[in-house]
Each structure stands twice: as C-alpha cells, then as structure tokens.
Amino acid sequence: ASPGTLDKLQPQAKVVSPTGERALTVQKSANAYVAAGKIEGTDSIVAEDLSWPSFERKRDNKTGIYMPAARFVPDRTPRAAALTLDIVPRGGDKFQVIFKGKPLAKAKVVVVTPSGWGREEHAGADGEFEVELPWRGPYVFEVHHDDDEPGKRGGQAYDFANYVTTLTVVQPQGVEPLPAPPPAKPH
Image (cartoon, rainbow, N blue to C red; front, top):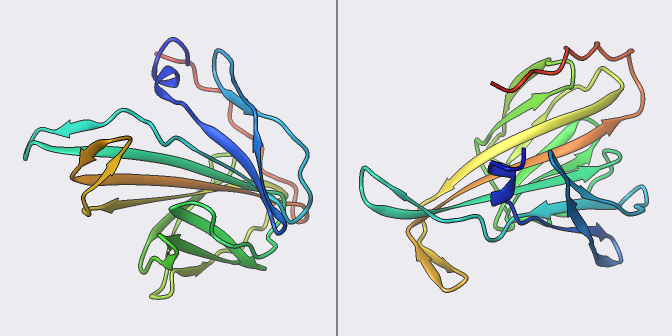
C-alpha cells in the first residue's frame, strides 16, 4: 500500500508481441499499479522494476540488488523469453524457466490460484516443468533466482542480484474455480 513499500516500486510495462514491443503507461493508485492497454491472444504484458533501491547484506557487507518482474499471458501459447528471469508457456501444460536467455535447470516454481490452492514444481535440466491447470481462471507462477555475478545498474556497482518473476496465465476452460477466501486485513 501507499504510503509504504508500494512507493519503492518504479515499474515499467510493455506489450510484447510476435511483431515487436510497445510501451504501456503505468499509473499508481493507493494499493496497486495499473498498466492498461489492448492485447492480442499471443501477446504478453511484461513489467519490471529496473531501479529498486540496492541494499547491503550485513553478514558479508556485499551490495545486492532486487529485480522484481512479472508477465501476464491470456493463454498458454508458446512465447519467447522477454525478461532476464522469465517463465514462459511452451504449449499445453508445459512451461519453461529462462535466465539470461538460457534454460534455468532445477528452478523451484510455486503455482497458486486466487482460492489459495498452491503447489511447488521443479524444473528439469532443460528448465521445463509440467503442471495441470484443472480450474478455470488465473494461475500465478513464481520463481526466484540468486545470481552471484557482480555488475552495474545505473552506474552503481553490485555484488549479487536477487531476481523474482511471476507469470500469470489464464485457463479459459476446466472445472468451476474454488472460491477465493475473504481478503486479509492489514495489521
């Protein structure tokens, strides 16, 4: 919420399609960011924050960066990676985790629905995993990856990067979705 952690974000969003990319305008409200625009069936909306404040890890005085990103797809049509750490549909119930353009072996992926149902999947050596999506509606996949390769972002050096990416995919067919629990109240 804002004021709070939401104020640290500075997301950028775009539509990625087989024919190219186009930027979306992102607007902040009191409890969310909204990127609006029309997409076609094989398009993706991708958002990432390339300027999240860096932080220092106390145990070894190393500087790290956090790289949050997200992708939305309206179906499971195969798509190319568009983010540094990405989860892409490969068709049917197959998905793949990609890091810096290459498959990320043995990645742990958490899959959840609005009802609170969730499960953990593990990618194989080729970064691929398979998960059945029985209920109609949205599913969110989340993957984390720590990269110990130093680099620079915006002129500031860092020692490591923590990446987290989500993929939201909509399942148009299937069993009636489980009901969502009541919203949690902030403490």
